[in-house]
Image 1 (tube, rainbow, N blue to C red):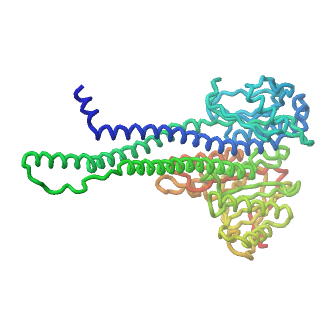
Image 2: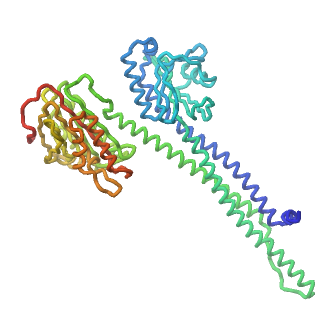
Image 3: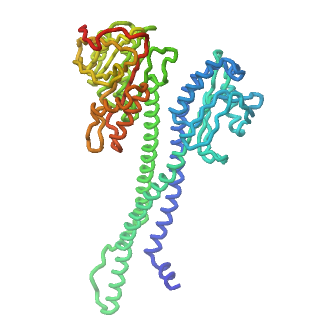
Length: 554
């Protein structure tokens, strides 16, 4: 009881205790405001990105054939659309993409048209619905949003379920209309995306605010204690000492002068204002940085998706063509890369093969890669030899290459009926060939100058005859220049050793063998460069006699 009485009678303890109580109350208010702002920013960013995903997926669905799909008709078109949706569901890292036809009598029921599931995104356990699967609408909120879209009162609706209560993880569902050729809504496309990141980020965010408030609170308490001691306690002690001295000596002492000021409350108010301004700025900066990081991550993910969609990714790419087998892969060192490959038919008997490596990486390299890929593809379709095509593309890139980027390109045109291959090399890696059931060997030749480096460059055509069972392996420098943690490179020797593990295997297995060898060599080292490979096996009609390699100057 004596201790409590002393504390209550201690002016310094009472003032500091009052300050602590005020700051704690302020901290609670700041945390509530900060949490609401943080959650709103997160939801706005997630809604915007998921809306774009849903619009992209909805563009794949033919709104005129919804009823035919449910009736089991237009099966070929249905299967193709379903396959594309499955791919998009995986690449966009969403849990579900589904198309439903809602009963518009009361919007309380719907039938499943398409349903793509990706349980790996959030360790979910969703089961794919069959076509025609009927289900009641989840709740009244969903019914109202279905109704708004069907009546074309809204082009997008989103539902957040941070605590679903049905065993599923926190997620959001964004809905967009699927329209027919007359503009009428015939179905809804829904994208379900996990929001565990938002839920998990809340606690660290609040802890950061509390730590910031605690540090400011400690600073304020130290300053207040020193201020009270200097401005109140010491002056009072001085007055008391002088009074005692005078009572004992009864003599006039030195004047006390101005021993205290009475603007304490004004100074305290200034400190609180200062703390409030600094704390608000701190929360705004933290929220802006978090939202910007999420936005950049989402945009980078979409950029990588666009880049991947620009390259052939479905194998086998030409199921009805048995004269050859081809497989390719591209693994960027960052979210997006500067490497690219391509293959496409110029006409029914000529297949173009492209392998290229842009000098830059990341977003700049990806943009230059997309431009070069388009130029090569369009110019090749117009006809001409590989050397002529590369000369044209080089001049076009040099016209507006302010970034001074360049690209190495290996371009070949295969006559499928004969196995005759004409190709040109613009500063790219030497190709590797497997012949006569022996082993892969690197073909050394003189290269042309890189594309985009200098105007007016003329390139040379080379010729090669591929016989039945021969294989052609193309790659970028990311394969031989892959480095381990000691900065030691993989090299072309290890690459050919990996190719010759199973040289008679199909193209897909050959690429897997090379990739496995690179991964084992690199170990835990961070990827240094994009890693891109392509392998073609010629299986055409009877091989025509001819030299294995001969050079033809253009």
